[in-house]
Amino acid sequence: MKKIVFLMLLVLVVPHKTNAAETRTYDLENYKIIIEDIYLETGKGFTIEKQGVSPFLATHTIEGRDYNIKGVKNYNDLFIVYGSVHIHNVDTYYDAVFIVFNEAGELISEDITDHGDLEENEDIFFLDGVYILQTTEHTDISGDIRYKRNHFTLYDENFNIINHQIINTEINNISFVNNYLLFSYDYDDFFEFGFDSSLNIIEHDDRLDILQNEIFFEPLYLNFINDGILNGDTISNGHKIDYPGNYKFIYNKNEYNFILKSNVSGITCDSVYTDQVMITFDYGNATLNNDIYLSGSIVSKPGYYQFLLSGANGYVEECNFTITCNMDGVSNNNVYDSDIEVIFNGEGYLNNQFVNSPLHVKNDGDYILKIRGENDYLETYFFTLEEGKEDVTFINFIQKFDIVILIVVSLSTLVILKKK
Image 1 (tube, rainbow, N blue to C red):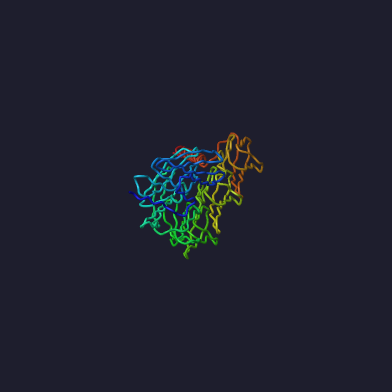
Image 2: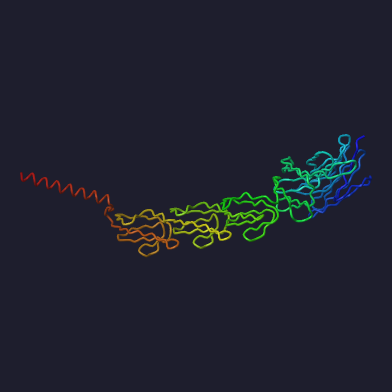
């Protein structure tokens, strides 16, 4: 005859060995979950009832199975009941189990895990989009139930196994902090190691993977446990840095100096643009010519510009650029023999009179067109309009000069011929 061993641990509720239905109540947020045992002819199941918002009542029973429920958690509108199960005529010992119900009380899945001897799911955690299940395994030595090891299993959102870790040393303190599972062998707040959301182990004496004075262009996460000092402030158990700046992190007597830059796009330093620009950046506080600048804003006025992006601990990025008025229709020091249309961007003044673009010039005369912009920016164009006269350009001048030379040479040739 197979021996059945009932695992007796410190739990939220210890099942009775009688046929009296046992009821356990769990307060979750603004509602209650009530789990009650149901005894069958050859097994024990349970009912799960949600009271409060969107109530439901569901029953889970299978002949030949004894379910012992340890607890229930609610994540992502799913209710996860966990504990242990004994399957008659199959296994001598209990196996770990968790059962998933949706918010309507419908069964989604059931997972039974046999790691060896006596297993019970102690808890389940949800962090960073995945589930981590803690399973404690015990061994039976002549009727003496002893701790053997802990199993931690990583599941995706559909409860497919991704990773698995075994911890042999008995853990007395588990904390769930900043998307870490943290473990202590003693009953104190100093953690010997922890898991991240990929079930990677982080030791208390690990060195960080940061080079001295390394420059980062994307936000970074400081993977560490216990305490560290970042730019003079104490931080604990992991920290995300997404703000540009100069950083000094002291951890385990090691000093890490590094820089986080913001991704700035839309301009190149010391460039000249003839059209509007749009500057974007990820993080930080920005100013443009000493005015607050919001990422994605349009800069269209001509001018000299100084873009400053400031961050932590005295960090400053500077980028200077110029936008011209993109003048069209007139050139400096030119003469025109007909009406002209001038198109420009910015604040225009024709012979000291304010004008808008497009500008139509019809009257003869000498003109000075000035375009003003940001930060004392100024473009100046001198031109003349003389109706009926051809535009005087350097090419025209050379061509006319060639004609004059040709006429003089021709006349000189005629005079010589006559003398002969």
